[in-house]
Length: 143
View 1: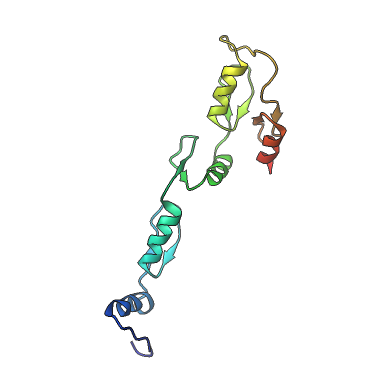
View 2 (view 1 turned 180 degrees about the vertical axis):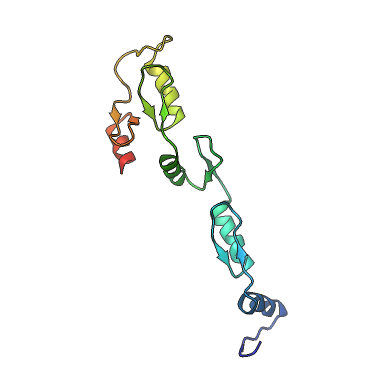
């Protein structure tokens, strides 16, 4: 290529250079909602291994999204889905996870659906009305 002084000992290095620099071949990540593009295929492979493979955390609200860590999953659930409401009539409590809702139903309601006693989840978020067991959990949620 005119004006290019690059020299390589092996032809493979020259081929990679020509494709990436002169032919402007790129490697785009095909994962959902990922916009990463690389000049070299090995960089795309490294990106896939680091960002899209390994343990995935499935959204607990029923959509097909999954995340590489629980922090991102929780942010998604907070921003994209509403809380889990108690299934008993006249109970207005809403919970962050379905597991918390089921625990509440077992511990707070009898067979008829009536509340057994004082609320176990007594700290309610002023924004979204979801209940938490401790003030610390509620404050962490708001933060």
